[in-house]
Length: 164
Image 1 (cartoon, one colour):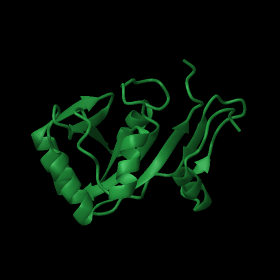
Image 2: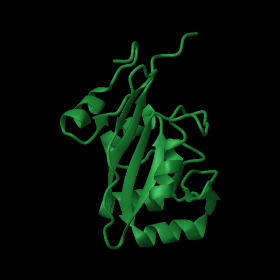
Image 3: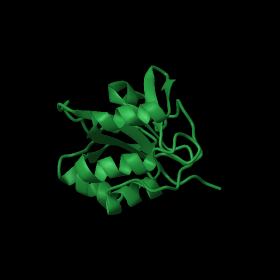
Image 4: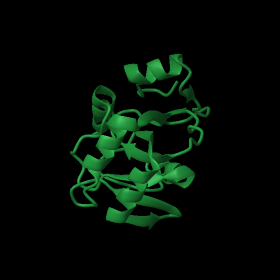
């Protein structure tokens, strides 16, 4: 076990349910949990989002994303997962301290509508803006998620608290 790193009760539940498994390498400085991506489903698209604990806790409690992130984005497909995971493994940086990658399955027509509003290429993946400063697609996304979508956590990184 990684000294000082703690799993949340939700992390422990996902491990006990077999949704995530501990993939931490020996001598690792963080705990890594990982689960598989969902299978493709006709009419549905997989999109991914890296997020910090507060945003993940809101999603767990409410089933939708909060409107707290001005540059909130989702990234499409397998390349989207790879891109989202870069925020956990240190290859990309943002000031919201991401700890979790979430996979969402939403209708393909919602993704098309979000792309028509705002999208950009990000390291071989297409991202769509949801936040107030990037696309403003959150209401459309949350409506689709609540009515026809689903979500699951696919990767978690738990590090020891930083010393000050």
